Amino acid sequence: MHVLAFRHVPFEHLGRIAAALDQRGVGYRYVDACTPAAGPVDWESAAGLIFMGGPMSANDDLPFIRDELRLIERAAAAGRPILGVCLGAQLIARALGANVYRNPVKEIGWAQIHWTQAAHQDPLFHGLLESETVFHWHGETFDLPAGAEWLASSDACRHQAFRVATAYGLQFHLEVTPEMIVNWCHQDANSGDVSELASPIHPHLYATRLAELARLVFGRWADRLTAR
Image 1 (cartoon, rainbow, N blue to C red):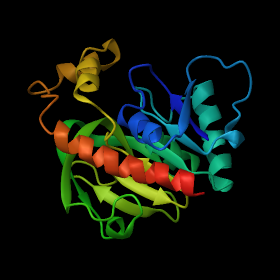
Image 2: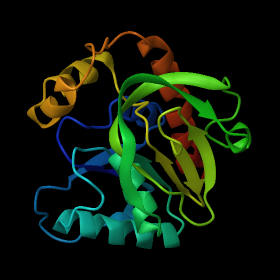
Image 3: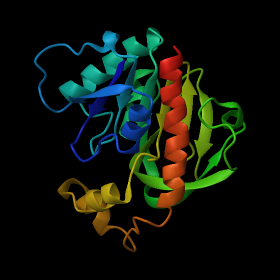
Image 4: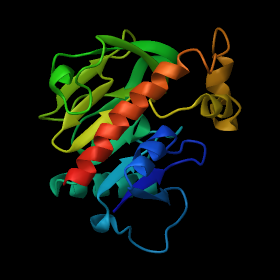
């Protein structure tokens, strides 16, 4: 059993998601979206699909963005489990008919999210605290696709997580380690965002709790794969 992980830039990889998959014997293969593939992606043989983040927009008129939107639409119609993080969540929202657009503010660094009532009964998020401090790095947001359950919000961004059928979209980053945060802050693609920060990001500030959340949430998602 394996999942396909669509990676848009090398530094936005699975992070702690990989550990949850490893612990359950679920393999993973990266699809590097920006690199021309040798042929069509064999998504039908995968137990699930994961779409990671990246500095580009789900609205960009790029061949790999168009390909991923079509793939998400087909995989969702087939009932395949899908997980999207940040850009990945925006791609899922757009593929399923919702709008993606600029958030009123960029949300970068540690900030609270608040779970909705639907989240308290959700297979991934039930039993968590009312609010959790997680890591963010995004400038865009999305409307909810038709039929979606709204799962989380923050003070700066209303739509932080949703589930529609077998697809989950998370605007925030549970997958990051402190090392990933440091790396992101030194990437040329993120230099503009970093220059706008009022103060440096402390990579370890809430990392212990974030690791606990990642282990629980991504572990539950991986369990759903193995139970199918």
